[in-house]
Length: 124
Image (tube, rainbow, N blue to C red):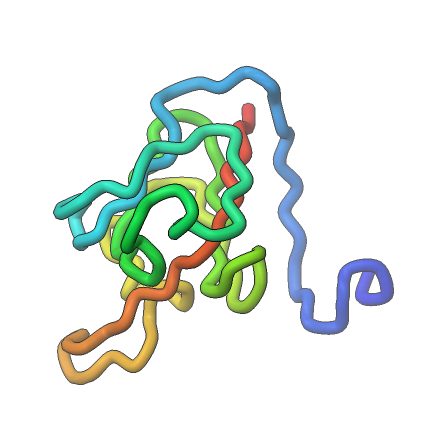
């Protein structure tokens, strides 16, 4: 397995991809608890740089809502590079996760959000 996937892989989860999109999709929000500006709702999407789709949105996402059967694969750099994290359900505060936490001070003050690119895949 390590020769095929990579030396740093510790586990693999297999999902069944579908062409049927169920539910509203995945919506990204500027603030925690799905507040502030929304940066769009995406279904079957490859977004190499969120700033190309929504102005002033790079490194600004703090929560995401998944409605329906979708996987959201988030990256902290554009072009699907850097830290990657997979979500199968909504998350009201990404700053509690590796993808959303950068240079946080006490009590989460001064955090810098990190989402720059993502892949949304419909599943069964």
